[in-house]
Amino acid sequence: MSANVDLNNRPDYDRVLQDIADYVLTYTITSPEALNTARNCLMDTLGCGLLALRFPECTKHLGPIVEGTVVPFGARVPGTSYRLDPVKAAWDIGCIVRWLDYNDTWLAAEWGHPSDNLGGILAVADHLSQKRIAHGEAPLTVRAVLDAMIMAHEIQGVIALENSFNRVGLDHVLLVKVASTAVCAKLMGANREQLLSALSHAFVDGQALRTYRHAPNVGSRKSWAAGDASSRGVRLADIALRGEMGIPGVLTAPQWGFYDVLFSHTNKDLALKPEGRREFSLSQPYGTYVMENVLFKISFPAEFHAQTACEAAVTLHPQVKDRLHEIDKIVIATHESAIRIISKQGKLANAADRDHCIQYMTAVPLAFGNLVAEHYEDDFHAAHPIIDQLREKMVVIEDPRYTREYLEADKRSIANGIQVFFTDGTQTGQVVVEYPIGHRRRRAEGIPLLEDKFKANLATRFVGQRCADIFALCKDQPRLEAMPVNRFVDLLVP
Image (cartoon, rainbow, N blue to C red; front, side, top):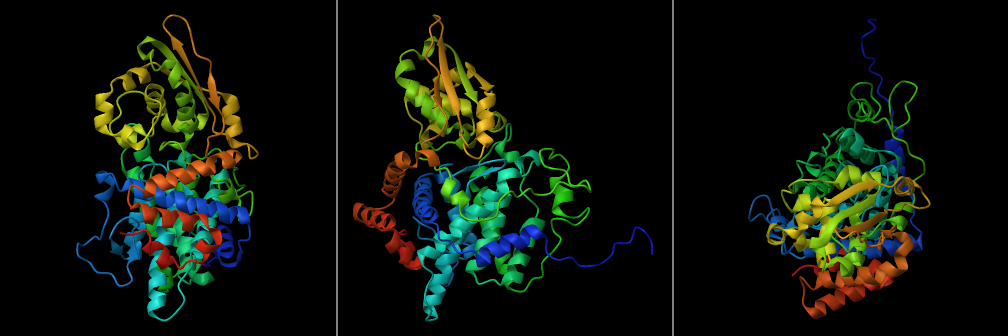
């Protein structure tokens, strides 16, 4: 036999896929903290989506591909009158959830926003519940949604702990697609073989590049990329349930697998296997860790690495607001990940560019005492040249301790320190915020503010009594968990 002939011995499914499938199909969620956090996450995620409906650049993407399409048992998009097939509904829900960069965050070797998976989860659960009722069966309950959220968070977050996709130029929405595929396939009734098939197709897909998140190409695709990924997860689950065969060696196949094609060539942070391949490093089993430790964006619609910078800037605002034109220099001490992702100089082309610029996100609250979504819009930016004047005076430096503690499992800090120097030689003290208000270490302080954020977002779309009814339901864990999904969504549409 010639040495260059491939042996056609079909392998077992890669262990990474089997572990995800077994977790989704067999793990029982019992953690009260995870379920309570998932309830708060559901509130916050839906609220972020409702708030985004105020922005035409977001809403222009919503609705059926073909106008006038009627879908039996169509999944609803909260805050709208749309009834869509589950694939497009997942796209739309994911789009509105992510549009303002205001939903939850996970920071590790890879970054991301695990609540992006709600697009697929809610669309599938709403569609299936309506269909079950029509067939005389019991609908899914919101508890099933919370369980799926916890599992999607866990899959996305555990893989992200030690595996950096950004360092090989891949976008973190790859993990949204994988997690959504897994949990949506389960909701849709997949067996183990079908779930493995769906997961294999999620990895064999072409993966999104990070080009649209980095200067000089930042654009609004980053606001719908996760919806697109969650939607793709629904589609792949559907394909697998129709009997499509899987690709068992999708990760490990020599030359043609994910590791060799997309993961090994520059990812020097990962352990090199004896055969010369870099594979995923998974340091802990799947459970409920990620949901219990997820980061909420409570105070500011801003990329999470800048949350503490915004908080520090708000603290400094009273000291500098009347001396903005006397500022000589602003020093931002931060961590390496923030410098790599969101430190930018020069012209900012659009709102998506501005909400991923630590200098912009610091300048606005220094000058105005707050940062809201409207502050990224073209009109606001053009009307306030002081923002760019302040940006030009900023120096961004890395604090090695901040970088180290960002990655330490018992800390996971996201620290920033701001200090302002004036032309007369005086200066403010350095204001350091190590843990943002949405961090697990500040849960008791943060949850009442998260609830206020949810109530304010509800009020952008619904009348007072409807807002009160939704909030009361979401505060009542047992009643919410028992609520049929279709009835819950009824409350969220006009």
